[in-house]
Amino acid sequence: MNTLLVKNIDHLATFDDARRELKDGALFVRGNVIEAVGTTSELAHLSADRVLDLGGHLVMPGMVNTHHHMYQNLTRVMVQDDELFVWLTTLYPIWAELDDEAIHISARVAMAELIASGCTTSSDHLYIQPNNVRLDSTIAAAQDIGLRFHAARGAMSRGQSQGGLPPDRCVEREEDILKDAERLIQTHHDRSRHAMTRIVLAPCSPFSVTPGLMKEAAQLARSHAGVHLHAHLAEELDEEVYCRKTYGMRPVEFAASVGWLGPDVWFAHAIFLNSDEIRQFAETGTGMVHCPSANMRCGQGIAKIREMLDAGVSCGLGVDGSASNDTSNLFLEARLAQMLQRVAPNRYLSEAPGGRGGFGGSPKALSARESLVMATRGGAELLGRDDVGHLAPGMSADFIAVRLNQLGLSGTQRDPLAAMIMCGPFKVDYSFINGREIISRGEFLDFDVEAALAAHAKVIRRIYRQ
Image (tube, rainbow, N blue to C red; front, side):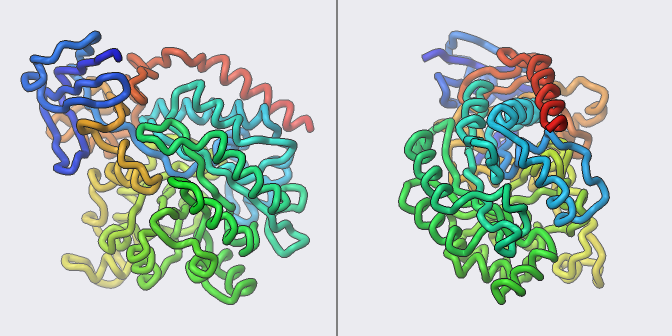
């Protein structure tokens, strides 16, 4: 196997168990695995097939995106000023025209955008699959560009005629959903360490599937090692009204009733949880992914991240769909997560030691490093991975580098790591995924961005003609 020595790193942020940050840092990689982490002098005795001098750069683990709808970059900046349910019902008819080519091409563009902003592992929640769309198309896109990928087999089975939100033409039969989920697991799910592809089962939300599908999806996932569960939950107050009216319970109660609490489950958003429900998440090991841009865009609310972290809830970050966020930049999500917590009108924060009383915010609500931990180790934990999210011997060789000598980082020498989000967002200058160099000096090595954008524009024209 080829070896790589990365040396002279100005600032190496490992995010390891000791949270080491090294000046003049170095990494030694054999194949797709990190073998040694230390200073340049400590690793000077190691010889390598290739030596990469990253003087003048910050290096950190690649970030982990744990919630996305990649196809939505075909419908950016639409329904700009309406709440979630109006946003959804407006876009569903357009998404109903998608086909396999549209899914594949939109995924390629989304993945390139993620990698350019520091992401090396991502999930994607594909919950609408009309016109013979197959999740395999997104998996093929990830394999082509080199992204470590958790493909979530989403589903909607409860259309408007059955009391659900989506139009009937956007839903599938539950037996077909479960059959395809089994096929995907058998075909693509890789449980091995350093795996590049894993499958997630992901019925969309309490208002678009039946309790029966939630239960059967959980049973199917738990019959296969390493297959996790994902869904939207407690994203909108309208959802709480729907759950009370339809099921006679709050969203978290509903999740518990169908077997959807546990360390193999993570939910997107989880904004409207009370303190008892937060403790329930912590006690059961249930995780959540915070998507601040999307939550702000639709005026939904602010997730109680500080309270969740203090309670021991596993929290990650997600960019959410590019039609509810309009971008796919994890540095930006980390920045907004930090800033949004600081203005959160949260009694828990106000009553904590040093709080201001009443319902005011606190500049101590979330630090830059805590936000970046959510973007790295936190996301890895949600996905059930112990091989990505930090840099240490035995970990996957997934790391990024940002050049420090640029306008937006001037004056940040005292703390370049915090500057990654407090002064950003930034694009990466180097990205390595599974030991493969994807971006070098700010440019993709084996991915034609212009061709991908041209294909993307062509698909948009075709979809809108339809």
